[in-house]
Image (cartoon, rainbow, N blue to C red):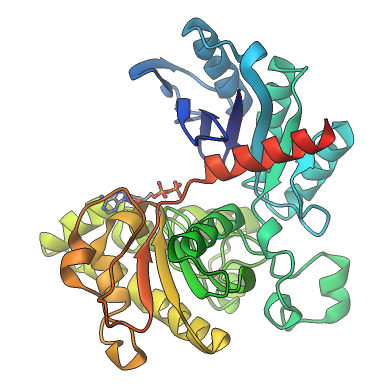
Length: 394
Ligand code: ADP
């Protein structure tokens, strides 16, 4: 028994065949360089990696090739797969539970594209192709916004004209919800407590922070779209909206050009020319001032959110780092929490620099606030959510 998880994202398609009970990954793969002459599709199955290179027009085409490769490798999707779980970025105000996909649901997801133009259209393409390939298997949409659906009004409301906001669905939705929920549950399990006040820092290419009280999110850094909040690989995070008007009026940039600037040419990439944190570290070591400034801006923003969420929560029990940067970059964890001993936050240098793939505590034994590193696993969380829904239907 397994669940196929499809994450047809803004610039790539990731897929994984997961055993939802054991959490074992049975096969996984990636489609990247979509729209470029030399697209790449990689499949890993039973320790063997196969790769194809060809022009991939769009996410749907890429996923169709991935299905061919799965079949060639001998993966019996038709008989083994009990559900397909699709990561869908924006559920708007309609979807806040894992949802069985039919034509009407797919249309609603497509209609939400105006709120997430970079994300929902590729999600839709992925769903269409997967439904064609596996028509007899239930397909389930798991939404990135769902976990934050119950954010308190004070945290979810933008201070703009109420009628305009209402007419256009403008509110703070929050994203990476599957990861924030999964990681905060792992922390609660690890520490054996369900009354924890937590800050979760999901630091990957995209990055977001959340404040969670006894399993319920009370604030998060992303808003109407995944552009708000922390400095990211290629996204600006928080900026004065006046920048948009200024660029429109003074630089003669149209909306699409500004969208491209803030989503794809900003963040670490905009400041330092690179969005990979490992390369950024090498550049800093080589004395690159732009790379150093990018790092400083990144850390400065992160600390602002941590401080804000400490006050939001009142009492803080745990700060957890997750995703590519959060799980691997000890310097980011150390710098984000440096000098906070007065607030009961004490990192243990040795624990922090130890390399491990396991959930672990990296604060000292005397630290009032525990600092943890917990690997996220959105695929497993999606697989479990899809499986649970399908079992309830049966
Ligand atoms: P996403 O799922 O958002 O694409 P990930 O969670 O995989 O992103 O994180 C990607 C980021 O993690 C990249 O910026 C990458 O440089 C960074 N990263 C991965 N491994 C390391 C490492 N060992 N040290 C520092 N950064 C790392």
